[in-house]
Image (tube, rainbow, N blue to C red; front, side, top):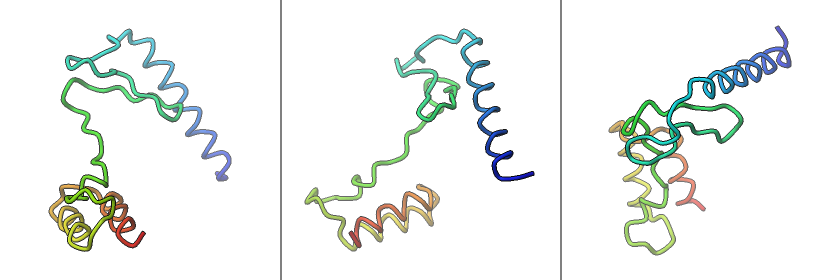
Length: 101
């Protein structure tokens, strides 16, 4: 299977899932008033309920002194949170990249 065929298949599956999701007739909002269906890239994601979805942390949340710069100690905190399984590898890298800025 070629790359193009694979990507077409993924795109087609995404569209089918999105169409099916809208046919489920889910309420538009969950118990917290947040949208039940999130669609940022053409592929709908159904929120299972009020408390299942946790947005990724903002990398600037590590800017503890709020000076608009990520300090060495703040970048280290992010790496420690990654090893403590509190954030993903990508999120830790994002904070470290802000440090090297």
